[in-house]
Structures are given as C-alpha cells and as structure tokens.
Length: 407
Image 1 (cartoon, one colour):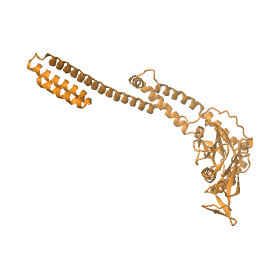
Image 2: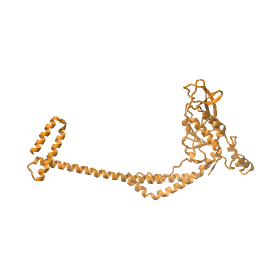
Image 3: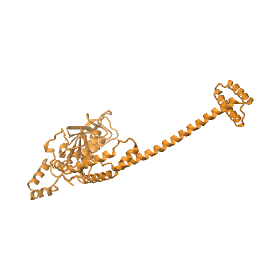
Image 4: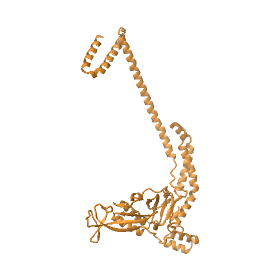
C-alpha cells in the first residue's frame, strides 16, 4: 500500500510539469489498484477492501467488454456468411433470368402512321407491297410469340415474395413451365429471324459511292448549316424495322426531323422516330446537287480549312498555308429529305466524292421513275410473257421481283 501511495505521489509531481499527463496517470493508477486488489483477493487478504472492490469491478467490466466484442464478432461473421449466401441466391436468380429471358423482337408489325407524304412518282410500290405481304405472313407467328414472351416475362419478374429465397423458390417451382415456354419462344424467334425481305439487285459500288460522299462531308474540317449539324445528320444507329430486311452492303443512314433515311443502291427506305417502316423511295428523291465556289482567303474564314484547295495558275493545288491572294475552293451541296438541305463545306475530297455520287446515285438499270409500277403491271398482265422475259433479261431483274423478295 505504501508503494502505491509513493507511486501516486510521484505521478502527481510529474503531472505538475505536464498537465496533459493527468489522464495517463489515472489509467496507470487504476491498473495498479486493480493489480494490487487481485493479488490481495487471491492471497485471501481481505483487509484491503477498497482495492479488492475496485479490482472486482474492473474485472467484471473487462469481462463484459470482452463478451461484447466476441458477440459482435460472431454477429459480423454471421452477417458476412448470410451476405454471401444471399449473393449466391441472387446469382442463381440472375442466371435463371439470363437463361430464360426471351430474345428481343426487333421490329413492329403494326403499321406506322406518318404525317409525312411523298410525291407518288418517287414511291417504290413493289417494296411497300412486299413489306405488307411480309407483315401479313408473320402476323400470327408474332402474335403467338408475344403471348409466350409475355408469360416468360411475367414469371421472371415475379416479386410478390420479398426475399431472394422466396423468389428463387418460386422460379424453381416454375422451372418446367419456363423450359417449355423458352423452347417455344426460341423456335418462333428462329422462324421469324429466318424470314426476311431480301433486297435484290444491290450494287456495291453505288452504295459505296453515296456512303463515301456523306462520310467525307462529315469529316470536312468546316461544314456549316444553321439548323442541323452534319454529325447529327449522318447517323450510325439503325432503325428497328430495318431488321425486317436482309441486304449485302451496309446503307448510308441520314437522320433528319425525326425520320431515318436508309440509302441502298436502288432504293431509300424511310423510317419514323420510333424506327417503324414508313415508305420506300426511288434514289432520285435525293436530288443531290454539288457546286464549287471560290473565296479569297482570310485567316478568319468560316469556310476555309486545312482540307481545302486553292486555285493557282489555273490549277487546283493543295496547300498547307494560304496567302491573302489565294482563291480557295469550297463546296456547297444541296439535297432533299423532308425538305431542301444545303451545306457549305471546306473539304476538297468531299467535293470530288459528292460530285461522283451526284452522277452515279441514280437507278442503275432503268431511268424511268415508274419502273416498280411498270413491272407490277407486266406481272399482272402475263408474268410469263415473252415481253416480260425480255424486260427481265434486259434489266437483270427477276421476272417476279426486281427490288426485293421474301425469303
């Protein structure tokens, strides 16, 4: 006891020098009293009641503290195991959903109502007729498919039960029905995917020519139009109903006023803002016109770029640096979609590509605007007539279909 009192006196003296040490002094004091109390308790010396009582209280507190942390550790381990188990259950649910999720049906069979009208001389009646026949031919299959796919989605999205275990139990209980529905769904999807409107008489060079022209226009360093940027016009996302068609060469897609224009070598397919098919037009609908113009170079010109060319000594020349005396060539292009569109642009390469497209992007086999109706009339009169055979041979057309057929 005298030793403890001496230690306390020494600690108090130290505290006078360092006031912040008072907390440490109290902790050390409590430890010493607890040690002494436990020694007295174990030796059977009950005379030091205060120390023994302090030791008992501290021992109990330490025991409770240890038990609390042990219980927390057990609880944390349990939660971790439960979390992993739930993750495993959720993974099983996700795998079931991924396995039985119906394929996306990529186009609509309902007719699209469009406010846009086109001059009848540009309308390709053969393709429009073929689209209608195609939709009619798959209507019952699509209706059956929609019913089956909705049943699949209803089962897979069942969330009346709140826990993952109950959801997994529900899906497991319906596994036989899921297998049966998925088998039917895949079969119908395969049937529809194998039936397409095949575009005929495609010309790789012509579609490459029109696509190259607009891609080079898009890459032009300077390209100006007040109400739509060239990057918004030349599009890369395909409208959904284009999936009805089978074709060899990727089309040029222009997006203007919520309509999509897909340019193939002998037809322009038009789709609405939702991607639904609207109409088929003759390529002459584009009315593509290109002009070369010159402007005296100024450093702040909004139409002269590093991809421009200039005229020197009567020759077109490519220059890295222009002088104030240089006449720089720039292009203007006009074409028709739902309205007349015009761009001014700097690229000389785009000028050449658009000029080529303006002369090549016309009907390949016949320049009469009435070719689709003319062929349809001949088929109605006598599809096996010698006249029809002569026309088919002359224009390299199938005697039943010129632009498309259903596979």
